[in-house]
Structure formats: structure tokens, C-alpha cells
Image (cartoon, rainbow, N blue to C red):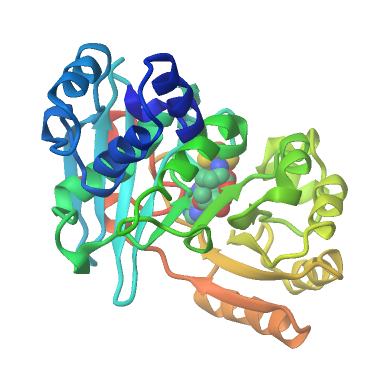
Length: 342
Ligand code: SAH
Ligand code: SF4
């Protein structure tokens, strides 16, 4: 439960225990930089403090129920929380970087029609320790606390859940994951993806330090509302007005759904819609799951769409999905153990 605290909260706590502030830094260094799972491993703090901490706190790790490895090297972890709920975390190794995709909630209430997580409904928000421990447990697993080549270099909050519906905890977790000299991950390498929760976004956008990715997926309200019910509450006009106030580059994610949002007309409408916003577009291939009602646009169609966007001056890339064979790709994550494909 020590992982639940922000640095400021821990400072207050240590003050109340009449302990000096430098002890906080030492403990955080052990926990976030060296991967300590027991206070007794913290050799530069007194036995007395080790005992006090051990009596009152613990350093959380979820249980790894299952790991599935893709032919492309992606590893998916099915993790069991203390209340027996399960979540998924995905490790994606690449030549120049190693990315971890973390979950922010058990399930998701947003209910996008194309998403397996949304299809399975919402259970609860994750706590700070449940969020940070996804990163720590992957580091334990890779034994990357010591070997430099296996370091996690990037974090994407693109797993299960809508991070802005749990922003307090996600925000503290991301700050904590920047603690430590060697293992820290800079905000430049952290991406938060959201379906566009307008009231939360408008509150945080001015001080938003991370890369912002917005799941757009449609060129107009009619199509967007039909695949993302949240659009009825927070329509495009409101969402994009906030985006216009942001002075950094925004990545818009655009799922290519055959016959739904992939025509030439849709591309032209999208170009108009995003006029004046500093952005790039990630065209995402739809990943299929059991029970879905969509199919992915053909690769030719996706390329035609990309060319139209590029010609208009918008940078558009096609995202290749990783870990599809183990259902670890975007939108395929869900927490029902029985449905996981090995
Ligand atoms: N809730 C957040 C973050 C988690 S979803 C969000 O919606 O942005 C991460 C990304 O996966 C989103 O862009 C989402 O639209 C996309 N996604 C969902 N289902 C998908 C599927 N079946 N195939 C490909 N991408 C999908
Ligand atoms: Fe939730 Fe994101 Fe899936 Fe939509 S795409 S249901 S917001 S996890």
C-alpha cells in the first residue's frame, strides 16, 4: 500500500511519524528504482524504520495469473488483483524502445461498440498501486532492474479503461513512475489515450505534460455517436474546441472500419474537421474479437485514406498492431479469464 501514495502524501506521512524527509527519497528510490518488494531489503535505512514500515505498510504486487507471448515478442500479462478482479498489461519490445501498455480501470463504462473491453462492461477504477505495479511487475518479470537493454522506455495508457474517468489515480501513478534516477520515464515518453471526456480534459489540458492521443474514429457526430455512445454527451464540437486550445501536437486515433468511416467523403470531412488543430492521425487497423460486428477496411482502402490526408498536409500513419495472435492488441483486452486465447 506504500505504492498508493504520491511523494507529497508520503512526505506528510513521514512527518507525522517524525521521520526526516530524506527518508522518503530513500524509500522511493528503493521501490521505484531498484524494485524492492520488502522494506528489509532497504539497506541504507535503520532496522527500526524497516520494522515500523513493515508493521504498517506493504509493497504491492498483483499475482501473475498467465503470461502469453506473441510470435512478434509482445508479452501479455493477465494480473489478478486483491479482490480477484483481473486486468491485462502488455509489454511491447521494439528495436529502439520497449513500451508497456497499462490499464487504468477494470473494464470500461464508455462502451465503444468496436472495443472488447467496453463490451464487457465496467467494474471499478484501479488504485494508484494497481496502476504503478503493472510497470513494476513487468520489470520484475523481465528482470530489468539490473539489465539496461530490457528497460521500459515508454508507457502508453491504452490498456483497459478510460484514464480520464480515473484521472486522479492515473496522474499520481504516472508521476510516481518518473521517480528514480535510472529507471525513470520522462513525460515525453508517456502517452495517455482518451475517448474524449470533455469536462475532465478541459480541466487538465493546460498543464497536461504527456503526449495526448484522442480516439476520434469518425469524421462527424452521426458516425461517431453510432460507434462511440460517449459522443452523445460530449460531441465533436466541444471536444475539438478544447483541442484547439492545446498548443502541443495531438495524435488522433482513427479506427478503419469497413463501410463505416473509410470512404473518400469521410476522409475529406475529416480534413475539414481538423482544420487549425496541430495534429497527426494514426490510422488503426480494426482488431477483431469474438462477438464483434465490424470488419477492418482493406489495406488498399486504408492506404487511399492515408494518401488523401497526407495530400491535405496532415501527417497520417498506419499503426501496425502488435500481439494480435495473443489478443493483446488495442481493443482486444478484456478481463474474463476464460476468454483469453493462449
Ligand atoms: N479508453 C481509452 C484508452 C484505451 S483504448 C481510449 O479509448 O482512447 C486504446 C485504443 O484502442 C483506443 O484508440 C481505442 O479506440 C482502440 N481500440 C478499441 N477497440 C479496438 C479494436 N477492436 N481494434 C483496434 N483498436 C481498438
Ligand atoms: Fe473504453 Fe477506450 Fe474501449 Fe472505448 S475504446 S470502450 S473508451 S477502453
